[in-house]
Length: 264
Image (cartoon, rainbow, N blue to C red; front, side):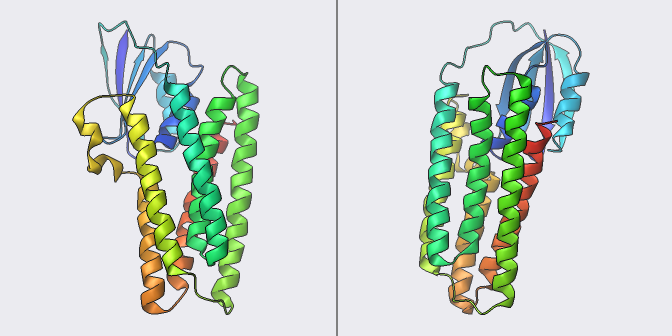
């Protein structure tokens, strides 16, 4: 048995962990994947060569690089019987907040909330692909990934068009209080998701630290929408909301292309 350590510089949240799991699924010889999201590390326990594993990780463009490969005496691995239950829980949380942020974003005229709702939907796609493709063929998983990726890109493009329309048109200001309040609840939801997934991997106190939670891109996005809401009120302008919306739409498209890579 060998143990290969990888650094994944752009692995910021559990959805990216799940992308890596799906990408490596089916590679013969892999016995265990041990993720350390706070430190952006992945340890792969495997038999045989590491080249195919290394190439698959690099193909996701998450800044993955192999640090070391060494022999290990470890042969027993705990079964993660609760993993599917946890994935259903985080899927439910992300999809619920997609609906909440989309509806409140439309109601409050906030492109930041609408864009963040699509980011929540993107995470839901990742968890959903993993769950619904379990036990299915590789071809089925690829079809689902392609559909999810193209649907996500379509929604993001529609969002861009709406941002441009609002940028050049005369629009009422977004409701800053709705932006801030809903984003705070989304921030809490993202923290809960990350906490649940990390709790299943380790009982160490380090995984409970706030510094771990705040490495997540999702949390940074939530803070950006909150800041945009404050600036909308302070500057009496909708431009901060449009700017954060544009940034998040770009991140959503980037995530969609990663999902499409699973369909190749």
